[in-house]
Length: 121
Figure (cartoon, one colour):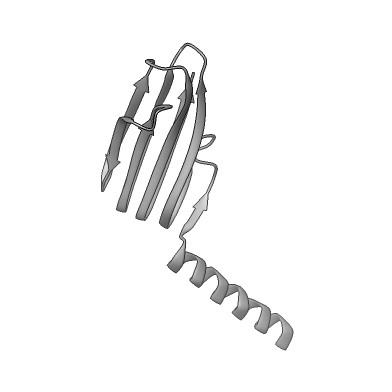
């Protein structure tokens, strides 16, 4: 019984530290709708443009915090951007100008809510 209580206490402390310093994300952002609690940090995804361009669309529903999305072309120039503050927002970014690898960077600033993104190339 003491071992079980100790394990539950350790689990609670680990979950609390994760929530405080990194946030909790349930899902894979570019594959499934992702629920987040206090998400922080930055994530980058890469997409190869082979002729049809890169189009990112989706929706965010924030109850707290902010998400900043940036799409950069193969030369590193930002070609699209979107902020998702509190509320429900539609996301749409695209570029067909250059062949190469585009990068989608997502910055999480204490974000709590749902992020549902998809890419088509």
